[in-house]
Length: 270
Length: 317
Image (cartoon, rainbow over all chains, first blue to last red; front, side):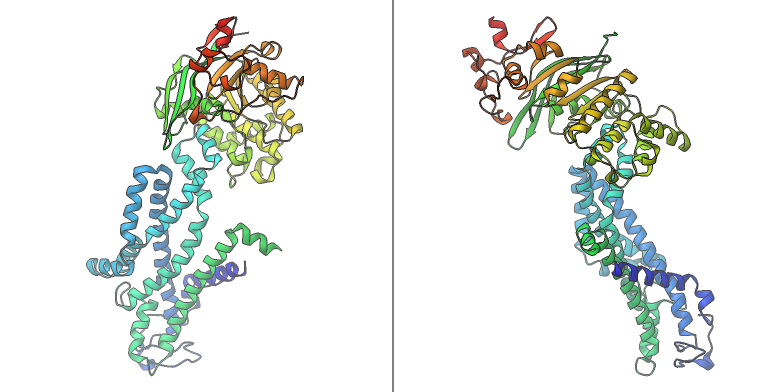
């Protein structure tokens, strides 16, 4: 419960900061001011300035928009693809199931990060291509998880009762199977989003993904690498931002898992 | 009374192909259900009662092989396409189950589930407000108040849940309601209420009722006629009075002895395993009257004065 609340609050705070970046940030994240370059922490620049004199705090706030929205879109796409494939495989079974799940196995047998790099390398580095590549390589886990719970739920009596009442199969899937099978997916989605943040920033760090001057945490870390010795604030603050976001997602995921586990929930009531 | 035939099952044979071989769970079953009739399929667990209901609804698993004919108002059901079978379910033939709790979706309020049942099977499209009003009326019909509309299944008692199931099953005024052990999971006092409710609604909507049960008491109370199943075979189908006053089949007689309380003498032996049915009549190892022919030949159905019987004994006399 505490994990869930703290994770959710942290994530909500991050999202609000990202959305409210224009209001909260003290300066324009793109405004270059060579006179104030590489400053340390001060009242004017709470986190200092970078090598082009841009306000680091403002850049981190604006970067949250890029990183969080990319993660969100990847998660939604993964849920969409994974849930469709997993539901179809689990509900219809037989050959359909075999074919779809072998495809999932095939995709899973490649290291997804390497494939993502290959895809973005092939298509060119842009935000869109990173989202596409990450979604295409990581939806498989979603498909497996939802298939597993669909296999359990479809044996439930209320599914049979719905069939007896002449319900259409797509309505049965939508109304009875998905709502009862989705909870493990929520946990997975939260934890997977933590991984996605790391992948998104990692790709930007390598120069794939969001291109300068767009602020992005991974890209900022990359730029900071030249000033490692002299200006620790340049990589400490983006790193902290990434860490907090991953922490928020992980806390949320673990909290959800505990919340959705009836045994644990009973224990916590006592 | 209009005695038009609603459901006519002819020589229904159901086999399951399993990894261990073929299992015949229904062997040439024939019986009819008339308009507004209540018929009880009576039999022990595993005698093939529920499978017949599933065959009528076209919901047998893929490894089942079905032969024979099932006519519903003159239409043969087994040859219908999947879509046509689906349209029969819910609108023409509905079913309620033994475990009402399991049959309700735990994450939907019961009101929403009744609305869904209405929306799925209505002839014309209903607006949200209309659907809600109809659903409230259905709740009222089964003796529940509108306060329960937003309740979730786990907030209701077993009897209430079964009422909701009945409301859903009758949402679209089916002509035939199949009740598979409708009261087995309920308390005795609640059983009575549910049976009365079923009877009332059946009368009110001029529907027919097929009750599947192992409880002869329910058969005696509810039904117009009784069909006794044993090991996938329909042993005797007769009017309810005949069945309880002068049963003909030795199995029915053995049951009768127990029900009437004259002796608490169980029928010797066990129900046979469907995988290893005895030759001849499946009941012969436990039958007092079994003769030579019973061990070798399976009896055919004979009809006498409205009674259908499947026993050599009848022919020998």
